Length: 347
Image (cartoon, rainbow, N blue to C red; front, side, top):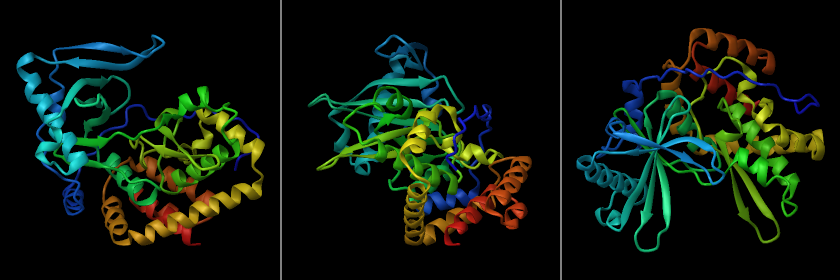
């Protein structure tokens, strides 16, 4: 799978539509504690009066803008945002947010979701944290749920009508890691290569697309001997939407090529097979541990529409060729495709 050819530019649908949350999915979210009434909604944050571009330390435009609000609205919005942070962190305990303040609200002008990024600061020690407020999209919710169930990490998020609140996922953005950390002589490059193989396999099995370097982060944990690495997806906008198989394999994005080179240079085919088998075993264990919830999610997903019929047909044909399984061609939805893809783990 990790051949000598350099990954090519992959074309992602820039104008992916937002898919509404149907009644069945709402019931799922309520049952599993994801639906919570929020004091501030996405629509409220869009009523800013002006915005100031945000630049990084090198003076480059980050494509984020700091939103500024009418003074009469600021107090209400900031209080609501502190309450939302308390919901994320402490189940909404009223005293938990009294020593916090909202330092800024940034708005992203790039991509489909146009999220707001909230910076929260502790008044006692100046420690800060972030969270995000986005527009609800059914495909994104399916992506978050599949990540929560099948990945090594848990995902903390809530929805309320058209508003989605996501906890910040800490880590070094993949593009920054490749540029500034990949050559660090203190890092074991074999471990980095291994993590790409596992992340690549996991993304493909659950059909999470568009895992270019700026859509995931490296979580780095010092161990008693060496540093451990884990790649975590941070953008779930392209869950089971595209029709091309390669768009679900991070190895085929040119932005990830330096990592692919590590795999080619440092890992043998037997190594790659071993790490894929390790991740396969973990996916089976996680799916069994959350069998009821996963089945409920896939039932909703199979009866939902989160892509076009043309893309469903195309992906079914390409996965049929990949797995040599004719059942993929008969899939009527992306949810059917994910269920059948997960079934391959047991073969």
